[in-house]
Image (cartoon, rainbow, N blue to C red; front, side):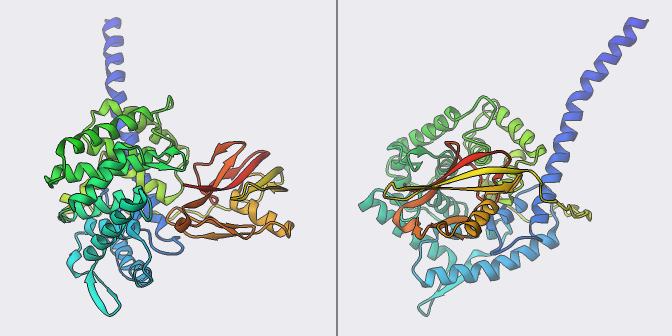
Length: 426
């Protein structure tokens, strides 16, 4: 009798574990959803279309707040894009995300127009034109005006909007995969392979004619192999901040769950430890954790949507500056290879941006300027030297020789270290 009670108890315990895990995962998804929604209230600068896209393809909604953000996109972001287009700037990535964000809200894209040189044309017309310019630039310089991540976003946005992607446009991406050109600097970019995978999978699913269908299949197979080869022992694919789009791509390309199960668990562990406090990072992992991808917007219908997501008031957290100081050495390496080293003591837990501000105040020889992006501020000028996208250059940041995977506002300094800021080409 006693043994049967024990067996029944053990069976009950075993059967409850999956339910407990499922409840815990659902609770995490709701928490991430709320974090992303709260980020709208403290969003500085331009409204983020990637955040809107993730909120809209989520299972849970606060339709009033999402609609409010949609209106901000249609005014503030729209006006910024209008200025960029009027100045003949390449903004294909931002145009593509704007398109995907509007599509995720089931907005009629044919009613969205930009007026350039007194000519009014639709958003999709401008996106198609920018993709043609990118394609032509690849033809004579073997690289896009922007980069292959933005190029892939452009293909994806056109395809999910039901626009036939020009054969030559999609073929340029296929060739880039074949020739292993999807790199950031000298390193293959997991994020770019992932976005290219979603874009080319959409082209394949749509049945768009490509110059060689076998080459498209080979490119998709290559991308899948690259992503799987990038898996780390801790479950991440690439790094913590590329895993979200990588899982989205594997989902879109029909990979079995076993291929990304460890990555899903790694993202859950990271999320519970607050690794993803940047809204852009959350916007990449939330769809993946719900086993969705950006391809979801292609068939999105804004009907009978859940509207139960409510934000409870939270007490503001006051973070007092640390009394503990840590020594930071900052090395600046210019494009010519000349190096200069500076030192500064900063409160433990300071962001890299705060450390650079302290160094700038302390040393007249060190200066820097920053620009805004969807990921937050990034370095554009250091000691008077620029690293511009138009020159195919950027400031590469590393800590004790290890490349930073976070931006200057997100990376925290917890111990003495050497930060290297190097003007690098790509």
